[in-house]
Length: 461
Ligand code: SF4
Image (cartoon, rainbow, N blue to C red; front, side):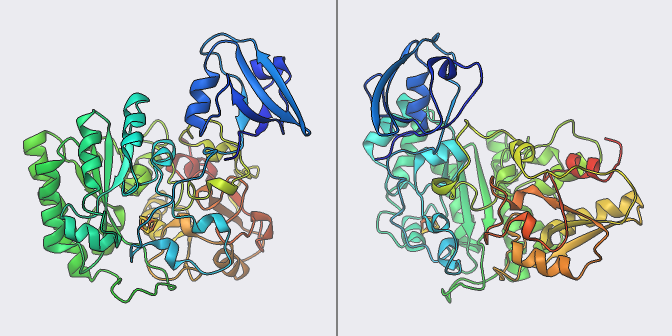
């Protein structure tokens, strides 16, 4: 078990007044070893906290005089100090199995930890959830949690997770809902496995057994060119259309019976089928924006000046998985737009030189019509084909340095290039480890939302 290591101390904070320093390893808070930042937060929230720590090999004890509820003002290195709980499933659709070799070790971590679900919105299958976990979730009100459902039929869920406890573990979902924990569900749809009639049954099962769920995100599986599972394949257009049809039919049922739509198909399904995105109202406040649901519609609202603030950015498939080696300190729950404030933002210019907006293939299909409505001949959208991962990885968050380098090298040197921050980790690296400075053209990093893009283009906001 590791300990919280201080990486920054806020000036003027209780921690600074007491003399805490970056590098201090906190071994105990009021005599207890916190297992994660949740316990750390509770413990350091008390008045007059006593800390046991190791500094330069020496053991010290200090009392931090403070009021109850006053922040300690200390950032620590990671979110979990004991081991991140990993999953015991072997899903054929798992994207981690579809990664090329040689990427950062942390990207291969198959986490299935309810704490990361609470802190970062990671989905957990609950196959390793225990009675003690349930007790902690209830006692500490760790809500909302995010649960991968995939299928409510036990046998189908067993098969999809390749785990005999797969179906049975949904009893924990029932228990969480019974205790008033908010749960957001997800169904990863695999063509020929849990689409069609199985998806229909799953949504009927949600209505029958788990109607208290806050929402259910229906998303397509991600396939890379490194996939070795022959049963995993892309949807045909007809299969994708059926997913949208089933989703919309069940939305109407849920709306009638529960007063809310409950189930939402990912933006990718609307792009795959060429159908118009649902209206903003139909997304009911965009609760699943981070899961890729309603992003196109919010981007449009933001870009056209019809939203006062950005809804947030999708942190990218790996952002939370990448925690253990993330050098950025844990500073609390990440607020929307935090990344934009901390990324390697280059000074934005407002001139009318030729500007290219870099984005993934899916993003290009959303942004191009918006740019074209501006009537600006000096702005173009530059889609970046994802050759690094291949498959259906068209989302902007998976853009890599290698693909951006290839695209930028073929572009004129004097133009402006705008890069959405969603494809960068907090330390300014793409998933393949390349940094912004390694790219063959200078780029300006902007927030991944319509307001930031509009501002970067010098348009009135
Ligand atoms: S539960 Fe998640 S991490 Fe584990 S194998 Fe399945 S997809 Fe991969």
